[in-house]
Image 1 (tube, one colour):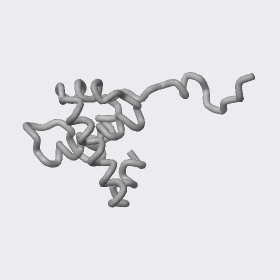
Image 2 (cartoon, rainbow, N blue to C red):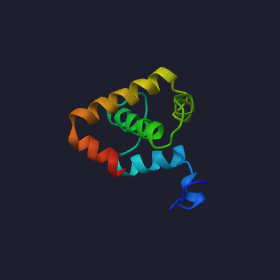
Image 3 (tube, one colour):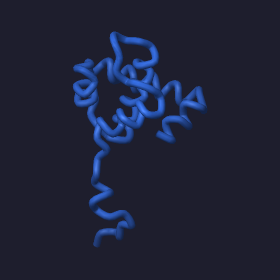
Image 4 (tube, rainbow, N blue to C red):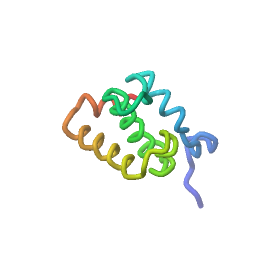
Length: 99
């Protein structure tokens, strides 16, 4: 017998879209897309990639395609970078939790 769930089925199986994650990060930090690899947009995009992987959960290939065809290894680097920064920076850890 299945255990009772306190969350409706429509909510528990809904995956947050990449556009929603991108919009939330952009509203909180600033644009995730910019000309070239400008530093603020690059960091914001890495935060969005991290959240897409861990909250989404989206594959790195799909995340890369969403961000203008970024390579799988670029997405992995961004996810690892934000993960490492969260360990050493409580402000960033709190930010990722609130977005």
